[in-house]
Amino acid sequence: MSIDIFKRILLFVIFCLVQSLILNHIHLFHCATPLLYVYFVAMFPRRYPKWGILLWSFMLGLVIDTFSNTPGVAAASLTLIGAIQPYFLELFVPRDSIDELVPSMRNLGITKYTYYIFVLVLLYCLVFYAIEMFNFANWLHWLECVGGSAILTIVLILTFESVGKK
Image (cartoon, one colour):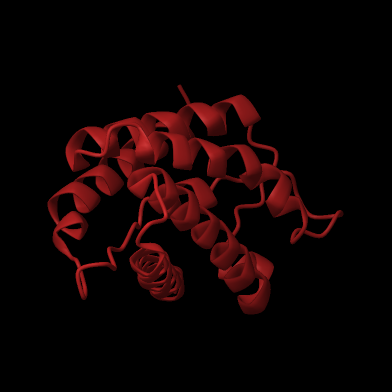
């Protein structure tokens, strides 16, 4: 096994523990919860096998669902993000860049990376809360949850990205 697999397993465990033990208990204004584990899927390098991204995404979603009491919601949403991530990343990566390019502020630039993360997280939150609530009778609360969670998650990811890479 390569060192990449061990790093991914370690990150997988860290994201699961942080989400289930800390972040699931944060509910700002009873609607905004940071969903940091989306960052795990956003970090897959260019040209990583698509089946591998889907498998990692589904497994992470399944473990998060197990500890968060959201049966199938995170798994479905994260699998969707895992399915579009390679194609969406290609929009921001120059064609002549290396195949093992990992999306980061340093590699993509602040503006492109922020837009990349913004769209992935917003799409994840839209799908996650649409499946979780499963009706739009209280659509204002749904919008508050989507917007609040997306903002918290994006701020957390950008903070980790800017602090962690220095």
